[in-house]
Amino acid sequence: VDILCDIDDKDACIADLDTAARIFNRYDLNGDQRLEQEEVRLMLSDVGLNLEEEEVEEAIRILDSLNQDGYVGFDEFVAFWQNKLMQPEVTAAAAAEQEAGKSNDLDRQ
Image (tube, rainbow, N blue to C red; front, side):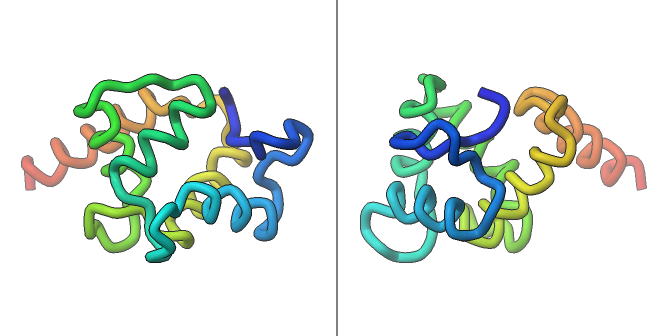
């Protein structure tokens, strides 16, 4: 899946905040305004990505770009998918490699 789409309406891919909010809120099962590991796993599963626990943790590390609190906030969710729409060739694997490269760069400093 190149971009996250509304499960009920495949034509409504994240292109606006209303769509993003509907998708985010669908998976924010406890209503705490952040996606926890199980909620992220469910979201990814619903779009056909059945990931192992470690892979879900890595997805959260990638998505949790603003405050690194271990959760995915709505602003982080939107920022990731807006970036994804602008650069659709970037896959989750490529994003993970980019993050790993940043860590290696920091280690060298």
